[in-house]
Amino acid sequence: MSTLSSVRAMARTETASLSPGRIAALVAGTIVVGVEALMNRAELYRSRRQLAELDDRLLRDIGVDRARARFEATKGFWS
Image 1: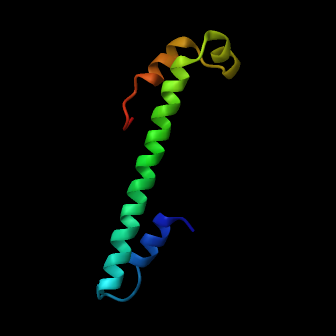
Image 2 (image 1 turned 180 degrees about the horizontal axis):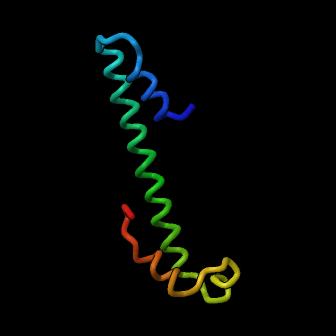
């Protein structure tokens, strides 16, 4: 089970009370999900920059033309 689904399962429990332990678990889970999202975005950003540095032969090998590589490389961090 992923961290996000664990957080969602905890949020849906039948007990309506918010104990300090439950609040701490929800906050920690939310932080973990946020950090994972940032790490994924950073990796995607690095990959796009590396794609822009490939020569035409390597781009042809992976089926991407120079214009598409340039387009991908110019996307922002959150795109």
